[in-house]
Amino acid sequence: MQSSLKKSLYLGLAALSFASVAAVSTTASAKSAAKVTSDKVLTTDATKRNVNLTGTNAIYTKPGTVKGAKVVATTTTAKNLNKSTTSHENFRAYRVAKTNRGSIYYKVVSYNKVYRGWVYGGKSADTFAGGLTSYDTFKEGTLTADQKSGTYKLKNAGKTTDGLTYKQPAWTQYKIGKTIADTTAYKDATFSVDKVGTRTREGDTWVHVVNQNTADTKADG
Image 1 (cartoon, one colour):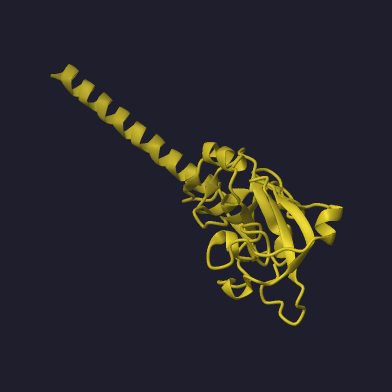
Image 2: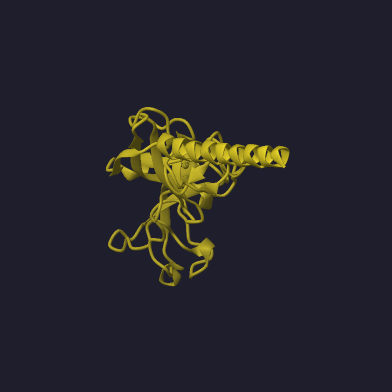
């Protein structure tokens, strides 16, 4: 009887001790979570805030070390996005936060809006680091002599992708798209070329065209 009572008391104390440890661990975990000390909208030139994921850090719903942060995109996904061959998966940074640990996090969004969240960005708000790096979505080149002197017409004027002109090469700047939605009226217009370049992810060539009828520049792009 005494042996059975001792055993019950021992088991009861062991369970209580375990529960106490668990409670302490939970409290410590909550206390150890980082806190955001500042959260600001980035106001620098938007075209200078194009970024690429490095793949070393995930995207989170909140700065990653803050309590309640959930994964939006794992490091594996981030590595795949780093090597993406479509400009739809370019990213723009638009907010910056700092934690009480001195860590910087940037809020980013992919151009196709599939991914949005916070990525660790190093210890300084002056430069992208950690899970992000600055990224040139488009590289301007040099016109050839033929391109400079040539004149051109839109091959597929209309509403199709190939027949449209854009304010910037498609998907190379966030939320900057077509110059006009339909170029049918310009099927017989003559254009010259004044700029040329290459989209970084696709490696395809884009030219900027100018209507030789300088009174009508609506389709220039």
